[in-house]
Length: 193
Image (cartoon, rainbow, N blue to C red):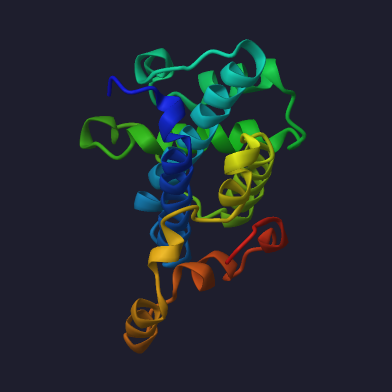
């Protein structure tokens, strides 16, 4: 992508939100094999978005995709960089959880199955970390974007109109907002439509 990542920050946040919802759905359904790697993707995106916003705020620098490639999919490297810029108040266990998510990302492939797999549906940890990062990031969007950035799902959730939500509920499924709220001890930290 040659476009400035900065121009895509709201889209990036919306995609991170949907990855987070997908991870929740998979974990709530008892499928940590797919849920944990999806959670890793959501946290990777939200931490990269933090770096995009920090560069703009601190140095008036517009990061592009290649500037973020050096972090690859490495949650530990990303979290270390984020923490060097803004110490996190998530307690000691969050790094251990990131390590589990990182390992699960690589355990998706049979070549890595010789190692012991550590699957967990620790949705409380995922919710706490994602809510904390999202809340801090959405507070640092430019004023003209802040209202949209604070709304969970940004520009994607509004596409779920009453008709679509009706079809989802008729089929016995949860709407995105119901999925966000299900067993979520952090729900009060999310601004939902």
